[in-house]
Amino acid sequence: MQDVTDLPFMRVIARRGAPDWFVTEYFRVHPDSVLNRYIVRSIKENETGRPIFAQMIGRDIPSLLRTAKELEKLPIAGIDLNLGCPAPIVCRKDAGGGLLRNPGYVDQLLGSLREAIPGRFTVKTRLGYTGTEEFYGLLEIFKKHGIDGLTIHGRTVVERYQTPVHPHFVKTAVNEMKCPVIANGNVVDVETGLNYLQATNAAGLMVGRGAIRNPWIFAQLEAAFGNTVPHTPSYRDLWNYVTELYEEIARETNKLVPLAHVQRMKKTLAYITHGLEGDFEFEMRRAKTPEDFHRICKTHLDREGTLPAKPPVDSKLFCGFETLARNEIS
Ligand SMILES: Cc1cc2nc3c(=O)[nH]c(=O)nc-3n(C[C@H](O)[C@H](O)[C@H](O)COP(=O)(O)O)c2cc1C
Image (spheres, rainbow, N blue to C red):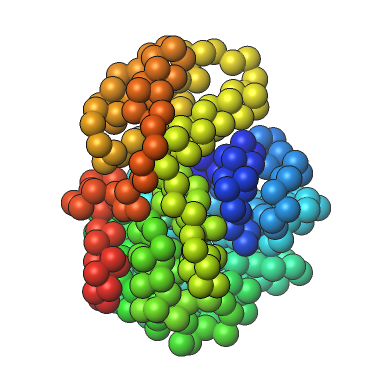
């Protein structure tokens, strides 16, 4: 995730139970692009013991081929292509999710990349740009190019993050693709993860925002798969996590400006404070200085008590997760 899945974040997450693999923030690719050095560090200095895929976003085929070649020199598990980013600035340039408006071009792009990448080549997609019915045509293209993995964020681009996911289409891909298919979108806890897997038969789950909110989610899912007792984190565990994240990110920041660091941390904290009882979310939005930040965390998190497993019902940030929790398949 952009501005999230960097070296310090992976380090802090891994201490609480790492996922089977990571995917980098995306490398922006265009005719003048050079590899972003900060993202390269998350590959070269990855100390989590878990493999990492390098993700590219872009539309210019020669530039993508050149970048893939450069990435292959790094210690990566494979190269992933982003066909899902809904950000208007990305889609306007016909990159990310914007590419899904032009399946013919996606076909050409995947053909070129598949031919040029000798190692693992995977794709991260949405179900279509405007409508879910577009997925069937896209699936034929994904099948054609012998990709090594397909991660599906089960929404269209225009649905952004605002609707429930549609597991039915992920299941169709699982049935038709030869490679592993990974289900993504709205996994916020063990229950939503298990239900998504059950609804789709997917080979695995990709967890994004749910892992920012609950860094124990990978260990908890593994415990559920192995029928062992999962860790139930307390408010104080969350306090330790937030403090560690604050310090690790500060440690990796060139020319640390304390007030700017607090603003940067507040973006991540938005996923963490969301829906916790009391005024934590409200107060954190107003934090300005490191002293404010740490005082607010201490006030709300320095206590025993089990954290709620799920975000609040009708959550705007984790919109639509309830249908996975209720096991409603669409
Ligand atoms: C802040 C943020 C940054 C993201 N950056 C990326 C990215 O760089 N590459 C990518 O494939 N998806 C990115 N995504 C999308 C997530 O990977 C994921 O598909 C989406 O959030 C739905 O899954 P979730 O409900 O588990 O978060 C990003 C999402 C967020 C919220």
